[in-house]
Length: 187
Image (cartoon, rainbow, N blue to C red; front, side):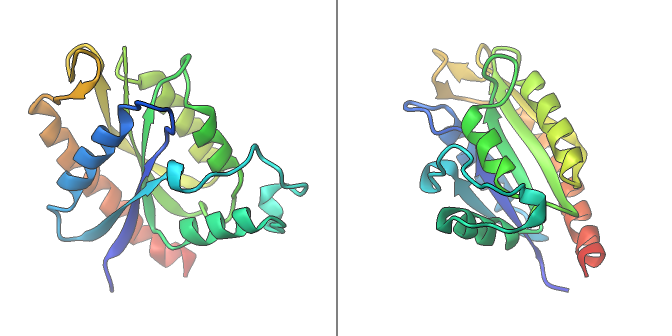
């Protein structure tokens, strides 16, 4: 069986975002592993208008070329690591919008979560867990939460504590295991 293919989805497009440094750190750690191939998917590279599909995503009757391109991009992966800031106790609108565009492309795949914020982004992850469950996206227990107070110098330069490395290893192991197992579910 070939290796699982996992996307690290950067869920913020805000100017001056901290997320790119976090996503690059995650990607660097992930690429040290041998059981899966990891790739960055930056929402900045996939500009989607506010949800403009007339039919519900669950029908899979995508009309817009931007939706079809986004669906093709997401479909190619076995699992996802969502990297998100916490905005107002939740995820950024651009990430929710990108998720809501699709349905079947997320089904029976694995997900893990990495967040950052004043409280480590924990509330954003809780929202992503609920959203993922509705999309039949199996999420792993381990998560990474980076504090703006302790993992960023001056709230902007990402300098994660070394303690996060062990948690990242557990996250990757859980995600790779589920991503591989769910491939057989999808047939």
